[in-house]
Amino acid sequence: MCFKFRTMRDAAETHSHREYLEKLIGSDTPMEKLDLHDARVSRLGAILRASGLDELPQVFNILRGEMSLVGPRPCIRYEYEKYRPEDCERLNAIPGLTGLWQVSGKNKTTFPEMVALDVRYAKNLSLWQDITILLRTFPVVVEQMKEAWERKRARQQARSRRPNSGRPATTV
Image (cartoon, rainbow, N blue to C red; front, top):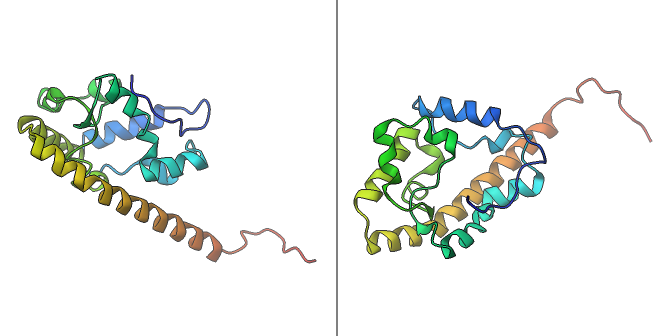
């Protein structure tokens, strides 16, 4: 069990995530998160996710010896059930808070590319690799936050340019 801040609204359904994940596993589509247009994510949850702070409670998993600072991201059981035998090689390393995939393009990579990066990490475990990944993590998180902020601003600007959608004008 991985600790994480709740970022979804109460009783959010999971079926859409399962379907999306299945589509990603079987395609060459970049693994972009559903967060952009996901009504299940709360406002605070969107901020926590964009900044990566939703993962902060996983420090408890690290202290308990269940995770490492660096390693492949843990997967969800229904994701694992869809793995091919070669995909399971990514599990030969202890799961981590950050990893080679996160600092190598994350949301711009496909599922097979993520697996290849995680397998490469697992096959080449070293302190130097972990230090390099840790040093690359903070700039990557800052860039992801900046991109999320820019996407949000672009959506708000697009909304403000839309016509009044047929509602009657109000006068004061």
